[in-house]
Image (cartoon, rainbow over all chains, first blue to last red; front, side, top):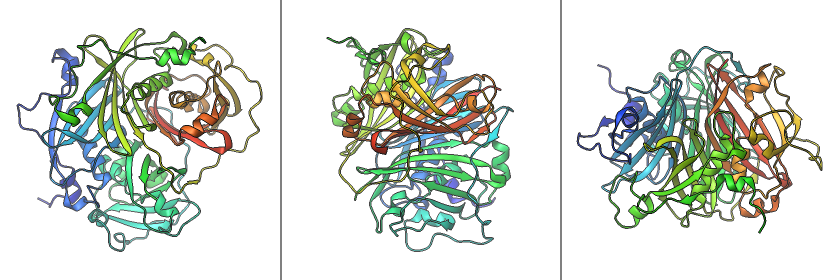
Amino acid sequence: MAQQHPFDRAIALTPAASGDGAGLTGAPAQGDAAERGRMRRLVGQTSPDYWNVAGPFGGITAATLLNAVLLQPDRLPVPLALTVSYCGAIRQGAFDIAVRCLRGGRTTQHWAVDLTQGPDREVMASALVVCVLRRDTWGAREARPPEVDPAPAQFGARPGKGPPWLVHYREHLVRGELFRGNPHSETVTWVADAPARALDYPALAAICDAFFPRIFLRRPTFVPVATVSLNVYFHAGHQIMAEQGATPVLAQASGQVFNEGFCDQEGRVWGLDDHLLATTHQVVWYKE
Amino acid sequence: MAQQHPFDRAIALTPAASGDGAGLTGAPAQGDAAERGRMRRLVGQTSPDYWNVAGPFGGITAATLLNAVLLQPDRLPVPLALTVSYCGAIRQGAFDIAVRCLRGGRTTQHWAVDLTQGPDREVMASALVVCVLRRDTWGAREARPPEVDPAPAQFGARPGKGPPWLVHYREHLVRGELFRGNPHSETVTWVADAPARALDYPALAAICDAFFPRIFLRRPTFVPVATVSLNVYFHAGHQIMAEQGATPVLAQASGQVFNEGFCDQEGRVWGLDDHLLATTHQVVWYKE
């Protein structure tokens, strides 16, 4: 059996020990609605491979919260939306996950996920996830990818020193250099997991937080930052995701406003044949 | 005393009767963390003024969920982010709101809000909200508003028949006509509450869902739609919001992709002096 990819080790979750099923749903369990609202508990461990400075890389947390929903046997097949509130700095070691199906229909299904630590179950991250059934309909692509040269055949990990998670992506910068005090914050980069790994929804969610903070593009020196809230919309069904495989994606991002300690980021992740795989948005705290 | 604005009536909430404080937090109440995580329960009523076709206008639901947090005396002063999962069609009449502070720090504070109906507390909508303390820092505006003529001195409610909520906005279309089968989905409009009302964060949140569905711009005829998930980032502090008053805002939106029953929307809401008041994103189910 091939060795597990560090990404898969990082997002791995197992069911919590039985008897720990009490929890967040206020009403007693009765019938279908209660089964749906039942709290499902999982446990996981932070990964040294995707460690950032004062906690895990936010993208791996997003991927883990999404994975908690994808592991539910009664979920609809395709994730559509993921929003993560980064509530506190996750400590190294074990964490608990509580997954609740808020409501399910034939074509959309809403989930809430909390990541907690410690005996008091302090909430470190919380997510809303929507899974859907995609159907053949009229469609159109309106946004177009930036015109860039193809990805080079070979490109490596991000250069220089940095937190551990950086080496688990290889990246080729097309435009947008850090710490130059640029007049705008746009970057365009080719990105892929390192080592190579076929793209799936958790990996795509993580890539949506792998952009450098926009303020690093605007300011001439390092500024302390923290992602407060991350939003990802998945626009591709399983077939397009499968066709992407381990081919690098084209990631484009820009900030609209930097104001009173908070800035935003809007990003797009492009796949083969100009498919828009994901759009992503975040708000970031900064100290300056 | 002046008559209450229909918007304020629509988002009004009152504390639930005492004794109904049991709820979603699993752990027993102990100390500060438990006080923070304590479930706070409120009750409200759907508003006929902001009724849509098969439920309330999504913007009024978003504003109500935000208001539930703004009513908490221990919240930080400025909302930064709001994400709403529209889980099911809210029925006419009473609803219950459960508010939980997930975690609070000095500068960011994370909240979760559920809107439920019925004895089984079926979740109809769920939100993540972030409130913050804004501080004087380096700042920059990167996005620019579209170049348009000033708003006309007089403009009225949306023309034609439609659901009740439409008459509670007046709108002047700058570009982007519905049901013409346009090659792109961009619209630019001047928007204000009707009757006039000073802008605040709940009203801004509601305006972020008052854009027509992007697919109405692309298709030649009506298509059934439903917002699945809405995201709003608030970029202005209280002073800029106060300066805006009841002056119309400039609302710009476009869709990036329409695929297999779901499309997206990215919007920007501009205020006086080219201030970007909010950016907003949503994913929408459509049937075609």
